[in-house]
Image 1 (cartoon, each protein chain N blue to C red):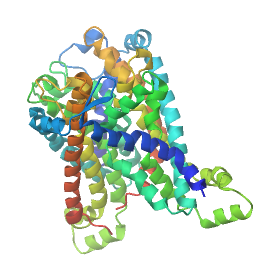
Image 2 (image 1 turned 180 degrees about the vertical axis):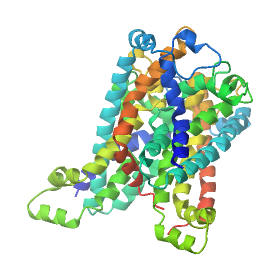
Image 3 (image 1 turned 30 degrees about the vertical axis):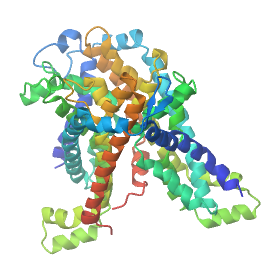
Image 4 (image 1 turned 90 degrees about the vertical axis):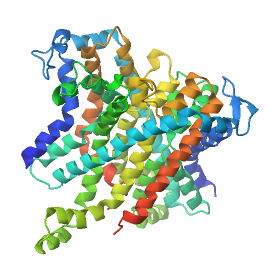
Length: 264
Length: 281
């Protein structure tokens, strides 16, 4: 039984293994028939080509910067909003909560036309800000954090306030530290998600040096004719960060899925 | 007291500016003619919408998208469920294949597309070689959409697997033990106990995957640009070409709104499944 599982697992990850194999193949090995799975030896030229004749390092920096800043931004906006819904009592609370959740009903891809017009009018095309500005809030993460904050015992808040702590202090020195597990889970999930976004960065950037890694990798195919070796090498390069995060932070990723509250 | 609203403000600001405002605006723009700068210049009432419903692209892209959806949704679901059932029992080393089954979620859409472009190459691609087929996947009208559906199915396996695994493991052991004591075999246990108890997750996945499938765009943009001969032109890709290739922002907005309504209808249909088939414990 476990053997079946391992074999199935290998079948599932086959595309990535194949990609890795091809990235080390020389052009003649690639054009043989039947197609080979593994190269005879490690042909490092493909990686050299990727690093020297494409701006892949710049792409990676762009993606990293955008993913990092937006994830931090989302954590800030979501946690502040979640705090507002959990630790305050006010009339519009329920309405605004549903108001923000309501955005989950609107598919983002539908809004690219009007968001593009907005960003163009603000003169933010081809800027980091232009890419980042639409991804700084998230209803899903706000919901997850709100659910989580609800589990913080009331005594914490009562004790802190009796000691003269205000809301901001309480948020910064109690709520956030106590929520570190879920915050880091969201950080990881959001970072991967933003590292992988394609459509919006494609729309909002034209200049090559502003392109992100996901957009850039698809444009490598227009150099000369289709050169699979270097393209697969490029794919491996851009996969390394997300695979690394995926493997190392397995627990947190699974945690962020199971605490989304979907039961049953 | 304005304090709660101060905490709320950052989130609200971005949500309004980049979700609700564009949503309202795109509905409004659908009723206008828009110039290159994105400014509405003339109010044309329902002209755009009438043209959308008369446009043969509407039915064509809807059918293409449905062709894609009926392959991807069941495909991803069945494969993910099988994988979740395989990995359900925790054994020494089960972590390994658990990670392998969830792996596709770590691979971005762009990466998947570039890899599958090679895998599905008609002459040197592994897929044709291993299956003995001789299909020009992205070059044939008949199979291009199927090809995209195949790669999307692979992409969806990771996340669907993880959700189904979590919900399967949530099924109380004593229920299953009691059933096997009464003589129920594996299949009966699955059909009568396990599956009903995971239906909330199934519904959630079905709903979110369906919306994602109906709005597919990325692979089309990178691989086929709607071709060959419009065989892979999906609804959102059509919206994109109207707005950004032809510069018809107003018409594109009307298309976007119509697509939204179609997606809403399908979403409501899944809620019928929720009524009928979902068991909440």
